[in-house]
Length: 567
Image (cartoon, rainbow, N blue to C red; front, side, top):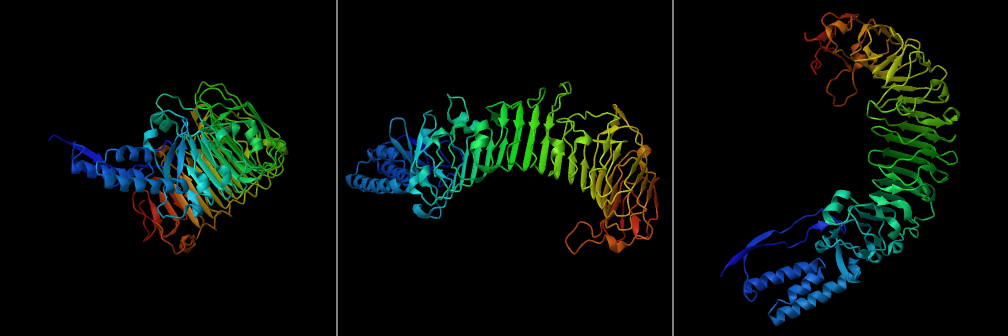
């Protein structure tokens, strides 16, 4: 008799919801099966397959299989198992309610065999694979079987409605992801759109703390009245009302469509708001007004290729941490600057980070109490040679980081503690970088290629550091003299000079009587034992006051004798 090869899967692929592809295939068996349905071989094969269907609550497939069993006793035993598993599914499982009213049961993945009434986390089901290409809307049923759930996660879900969420009185974390690529693989005749959350009523979940969404539309979401810890949304849709009606201390929205152009936030529960938008893929907003909110931390970033959507941000006087940035990627994009209304009045602002391509902040508008100032990001630098960068009035500034520019008009306050410079543009005729008036203790400086009006600037004459300096890393400085002579408190010193010979440092002046012991690391596992190392130093560079214990390998690398010199 002709034989065919059948592949038998004793367990179905494991998946995470109505439209999941995560899975594991177990007990893969390849065998020759006699196609004669009355043969003993075929009957054994069907019996095994039916038992697999029953174990995973695929009752509709089990019924079809039982009808093919010819032995009355075997058929009776299988019907008994059918009834047993069906009763179990009613209290241990969930299911899809189809448009027809029929239910397709789902078995919850519960490897530890915790009783449904005690299960704390539900995140996996044995998937009903037959639903794959139906393109039908379904409702999930059965969560009431798991009243102790604290975490409910649907990592790949396209179900439009979920019943019994109100029965989850202990629920703290709810997570749902609807992935566009997976959706288009599952539902071949329907274009993807973010899942409408109207079918997810969370208003009765009074212990809910965290909402994590990806690929959903929050417009019709019902949430509890109490204040939650956080809401996160990616690749979805949100409204102005969501920002006010969802009572969360923290809201973080990334790469999602703003349904409203004007966002006016007055949510008194909200303390942290982050909005990150790429207008090439998402609909941006034009105006953000948080003046009447209780926000303490605000993060707004918008990137685009040509035209920026955002025009204005209205700030409140409670903000202590502010990050604004983003850029237009095309060189021919019109230069526009987002207005920051109320910046100068932020007397509680401690941390400020901005990209000049996003908003050309004038130094005079910086609040006086800033402790950390970060300037960086891609795009243009819309400043001019005569612009002032006198930060001396920022008497509480401790950290200054600038990855965009340096200026002949730059003056740091005396008490600045840490500096990070890696500029690409220069304004004014800069010959000297003098930090000797400051109380700087640490820094990282990379000069490299710096242009002024499209042309490389000449070498600096002198870079001078203060006596308070303890830790410094210097790269490609393009300075004739690097003066560290005052720095008698040094604990860590790295210099890497990769410039061409014509731009190589001419002289490095070290403090007199440097002690090797000052650079010794704590007793931990490190690449080197001592925190002093020079590399790529030109053989024409003079190292003044070089201690005898700082030795060269002959290839421009210097380190402590006996330590690893070559990097």
